[in-house]
Image (tube, rainbow, N blue to C red; front, top):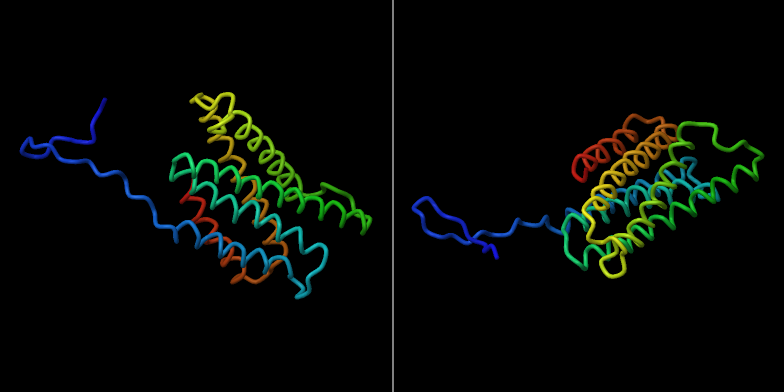
Length: 201
């Protein structure tokens, strides 16, 4: 069994310290910001409507929950892995409700579905989240996963999740860009999102 020591400059044994985990505020500050932006995106006209639930739920799911869940998983450990799954279950539920809202809202208004890049990328992201959740639950769950020791499945889940995150954050950005014309508003949304992308991917 390997020990947690290494040779120092003079040959003496030195205890290797485990890598320092990021403080909890690193994990929480971005989700709190994104929830604020989700609320702001939901009321571009200043009034909450049935449609408002769509941008709010989608940003909450794709940005707030996802960032929090990914950083939890990066911290590692049994408990963090399970909470990661719980948070992604919340994200999937929120995204599914957000999709229901926009689907029903278009039906009410008599509009055609899936007519923009935003809608197609959003649908791809939603289906990706569903697929990854099922892979995580049935295959990688630390207690009941059928292939939770498979490194190949873990690698697939990791890289497919990155693609899903890029798609979900991309479609969120397209929507925000279309709903808010102010350069300040756009930068307030895009710059932290860009920084967070580099942080978690």
